[in-house]
Length: 126
Image 1: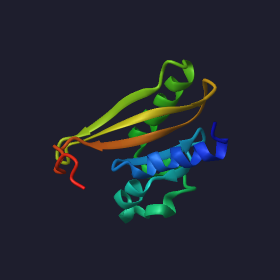
Image 2: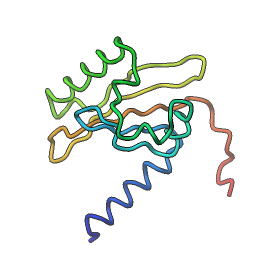
Image 3: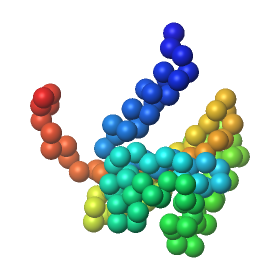
Image 4: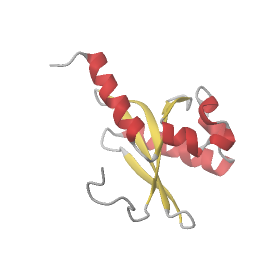
């Protein structure tokens, strides 16, 4: 059986290898982690310098209200864990907010953007 810190390495690697931008926040909406795809995606807004900042400062008032409503919804039930938040037709991109829990207790959330373009990589192209 692995030690806890070994699991952390696996989970960090899982997020870091994702080609989709993943931004992880605590319940105070502080950006505590951005995977490399997110750092690249938000390069013009500061990239990795956004870590430690409040996510709400990066959004307009309408989006701030929606983010707060989603987090409140996550807090109401352990079964409330994912919300589809937008589709950008121009970029063929969708966004989600996903609850992060420890022993069922809400500890934060992450925002994930996925592109819906067909895969250009060939099967097992190594």
